[in-house]
Figure 1: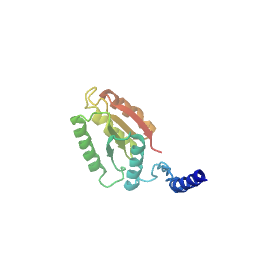
Figure 2: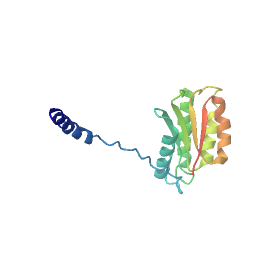
Figure 3: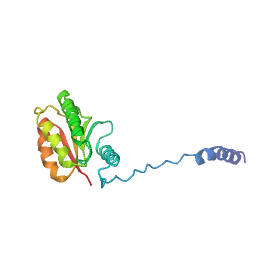
Length: 161
């Protein structure tokens, strides 16, 4: 009888702790955003942020180059400022396995022009280890890849859809 009493006492003490085991909360990842149908800058920035987050490795350091659509009031000024920023970053030699250069715009052809122009001034192998993520139209991907590959980067294309 003494053994049964002790077992019941132990069961009474252990049972509350076993019942209080915290349930693991399953992480639910949100569905990917889709390409905005308009040139709305806020919607595009949210879309680009989502695509970069999904395609960059954890701990990476993304440099995002985004220009508005061609119908924006100061499109050429914005294009020139981003080109100047990109040229400065490339001249400094952004390298390393954790660096991601991401390019996106409602005007895929214009952002592709910017990449092709800027990377044309980069030396062979100068950006070894860095990654380029081009978010745009499939028609622009081949020329962007041809322009960035000699610099030593790893190229990844994500079709904006």
